[in-house]
Amino acid sequence: MTKRELKQFVGVNLLRIFIAVTAIFLIMFLYVIFSKGGKMVTWSFLTESPRKFMTEGGIFPAIVGTFWLTVISIGISLPLGVFTAIYMVSYGKPAWLVRSVRIAINTLAGVPSIIYGLFGLTVFVQLMKLDVSILSGSLTLAILALPVMINASEEALRSVPKDFREASLALGATERQTILRVLLPTALPNILTGTIISIGRVAGETAPILFTAATFYTRRLPTSIMDEVMVLPYQIYALMTEGAHAEKQVPIAYGTAVVLLLLVLFVSAIAIIIRYNMRKKRKW
Amino acid sequence: MNKFKESMFKGITYTAALFTIVFLFGIITTLFVEGIPILKSVSFKQFIANPAWHPTHFPPDFGILSLIVGSVVVTLGALLIAIPLGVGSAIYISEIAGTRTKEIIKPIIELLAGIPSVVYGLFGMAFLSPFLIKVFGIPSGLNALSASIILGIMVVPIISSMSEDALSTVSKSQREASFALGANKWETIIRVVLPAAKSGVIGSILLGFGRAMGETMVVIMVAGGAAQIPKSLFHPVRPMTAAIAAEMGETVFGSPHFHALFGIAIVLFIITFITNLITEFVFLKKRH
Image (cartoon, rainbow over all chains, first blue to last red; front, top):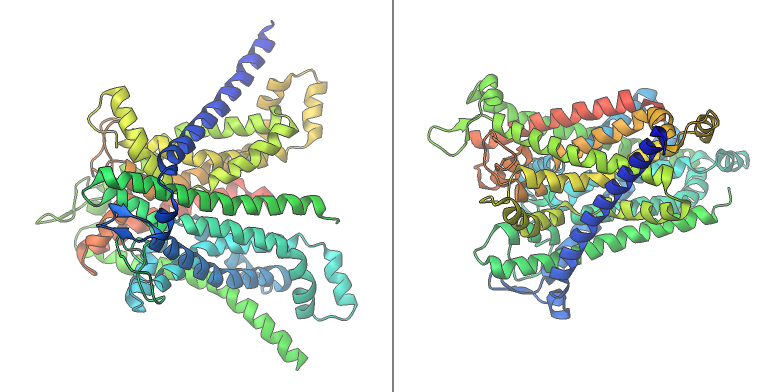
């Protein structure tokens, strides 16, 4: 073996070791979570309320809470994101505004999620007097999801071939008609993928809802969007850091983590499959 | 009528776009309006350079140096783990693995990037920490080391998938030219592909840096929480995000402690903002 071959041998195997270490750690991570939490997940665990300050019972209220926070926040950020993307792609004037919006999106995308929490606390909870509620939390999460939503929608709209748009305009359609009847329908699957990815992200966020929506223990379900709620990710955190019965709380935390993980992985897997199929089917 | 509809629709998209600017402006304004008043209680220099953080003592100490050091230590520790693993696996996927393997590994990495951080935090607290206690014989497994490990693993998928994107944009002809000149695979990777994808790879690392710096749940659960400058990796630390998340619930609205937490958020915001700026303008410029 020459020196060059030796170098290549060492280098390539080093890369193999790196990827193996990553894989082993992640497999171990998933194994620990699922082996310790899997046996907790029973029908009653999913459908019952917690009892005795989270040391017994199920996680149904947290599932409901996560559902509402996710649905409402996506319901706000989806139209906002799509319209912003339409503006960026189809109108795009004046140039300074486009540039400002772009800077704003990129900056928002890098803002740590705890800072969104602080913003939600001062503006929604305190200033607008929405209190710690589903609404405050959803608004906070909606802003957090916005950059991802805009970028995905923009990319989707830009991937529509220029000919489509020009053909539509040549047929006498107005700009608005072209957007609504040609661009959006063509870009829809990609926008959907972006939306699903945002759902996964929003459902797993904890820091932004710490002070805006989450509560550790309540036996009843929310009756309006002004109620505070239990939420899956926050519940994991609270079970690990609050309360006095670790031996009873840790297994429930593992069980909750399994439910949250399955939810997030399932949602992201759908997005990945949709995108994969779409790339195969696309004819242009 | 039609004309009205047109301008109406345009107006809606215009307004939606303005919202992003309003939100960013709102976040910055909130941070500064609530954060700047801490300078009434301490001087700027004391706030930044004093390592004593005792916000509930009488009199209180509002120095955040140890919190900043805590954030920096766990972030650098995380990158020390995530850069070789992330960039290494990206190179492997893009240059060495076959198409088949690539098609399996890529979506898995994407999936992993979506795992909620609180689940990593749970893993760190309930599994890694007892494990470290056993291996190193230390009194507590919640410290800078365990936070770095968990953060590092969390950041790997981000660095890996972005680096892989960068590597795959290097044109085939460049690789072929290198082979034609007699270089082997490894030499081609090190001397041709990596230099050509340099800006994207560095961009991915900066993104990982920002992500680790801003991560809250992992560090609040795993880093140990002591506001001190750590003497070794086995000492507990209290990163900035952990201090904000842990203490905000207990402060009185408008108290000096409350303003101090927003002051920390300003520092955090500025750090991530500058990181972003560098990423955007220096390294990812090519993309636009």
